[in-house]
Amino acid sequence: MVASLAVACSGDPVVEVEPSEDLDLRIGRLDQELFHAAPDSMASVSLKAYATYGEFYRVYIEQILQGAPINDPRLPMVLHRFVLDPDWSDAQRAVDSTLGDMEPQRVQFEEAFGRLHTLFPDSLVPRVVAFNSGFNYGIFPTDSVLGIGVEWFIGKDHPVIGYLAPEAFPQYVKDRMTPEMLVPSAVKGWLLVHYTRDIRGADLLTNLVETGKVMALLDVLLPETDPHLKFAFSREQLAWCKANEFLVWKEIVSKDELYSKDNDLIARLMNDGPFTNGFPHESPGHIGEWIGYRMVMAYMKQNPKTSYAQLLALKDPRLILKDYKPR
Image 1 (cartoon, one colour):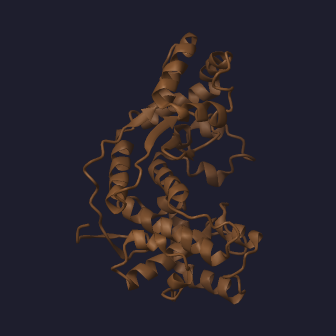
Image 2 (spheres, helix red, strand yellow):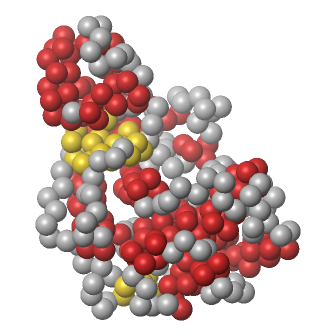
Image 3 (tube, one colour):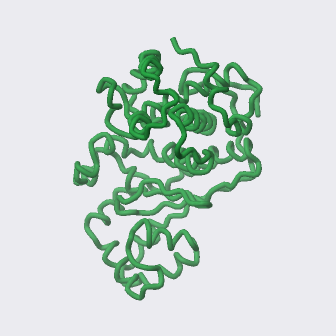
């Protein structure tokens, strides 16, 4: 690590981490391989994709697209219909025009996972694969692949986004469908799957701290990314969080919610939504993510020699809680 400082989402300084130079990250363009092929060549294209992407191609076909079993002889026909469907082909044209060759995103991924490799030299660097999911999945991390449904990031004002049913895609979700959200959403998804422990059945404090650890790590991996993008907040929502941090914390503590294991309570504070129930409509959803992040940043400020490996290894969230004193 180097001695220069970057600015965290909280405004506090964090130590910059130099990316590992060993990475040569590429983005597999499964979306273009399917949609840019002749529709009558789907049998050979599918076989080639299976050879290229291996088990992840089966996951894409069977779980993400929910198309057909990978060995089903009807699969080429299913793919033929998919790439010719006006909705999905329009979405892919939007991807091609908006994201192009994805070189800016590739550079961001290479730097982010290069920093992660510096912090955790034995960590697996994922293979990044872009696909068109038909708006089924935006981010799909597996054990070794970081899959990205690129049609989710073509711009909230694109006509294709306007056609999405509001009951399945409420406005706050559509507002995030911008190219700028692609990299932070994907890296965050990878961290949530691979750098958090199983906390099912744990109390609210544990949920806050474990998510806060991920957000603190995300800060280091994406130091130049606007903070509100990392949280998937609007700028106004992040400003509201900063202005009302003490009030949010006071609400949680005054109701003795911190050590509660009530699933509904935890979901209210941690799950997504247009705002957090129980707080003003100016608040963002998943506000617990912000509070957890602030807890972890307070701990790191008081314990500057703590490595991120040591931070993630901390099992007792009360060790982190003791340094959190919002005002």
